[in-house]
Length: 318
Image 1 (cartoon, rainbow, N blue to C red):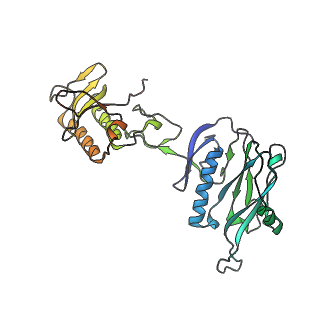
Image 2: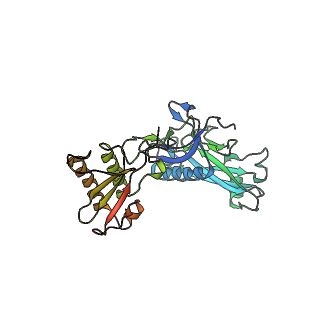
Image 3: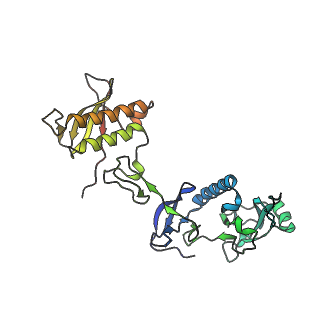
């Protein structure tokens, strides 16, 4: 299967049900606005676990499941049984006690050549072969990915279950033109970036997607920077004394200290008070070790042993 030429690396999800999962995709290749992702095997394993969890919670009759069968390139052929939900009688009665089952026969030695895995009914012969199944060999790892649409399986559909073939980069296209995959979003702690797509990795404030603060004090430092830069765009850092109630006691630009005195510097009492309140609320939520983990740098001082410097993200130059 040919992979698209204009791909990006991103993450996708389906609301809060599936994902987010790393993938590649062509953002111009859409179905009703939804994207068609290609997943590496690790992401397929995670997707498989998520679909199986949903099926157990909501029922196999309303959830497709993904399965990963793993073996070796020099292993003997194996048969694998995959079980779904209970079969519903055609007369509309209560669910029966028999489960839906498909059999997957895998010719491991010829997977890399022309032959592929095959899906069939779980006949008595297939069940017997599955009981004897044993992955042997020490060759290269191989995987077979199976997509099963249980709700259509008992309707005689020949597309209710299929083997997902990898593309030319070894990634597996799952759910494209069928599932409602959307690109995952992220939000910046500064509050200015409201739901950027996952592959858009930088915020104008200077923070990247992967450098987002994970603790209250880290988020507070970013917020304080936004507050102070509203009146002093060149503000680069601040000194914060956390003796008693946390407060901003000095603000610095790259070329020196910015005057914080009333009616002299760029700041007013309301702005500095707002910054102090953000710091105090964050201190109430902080746990031991959060100061260092949030990048707060202890500053030696004769008058205070709890003076810290917080450095604001550097906005990108234009």
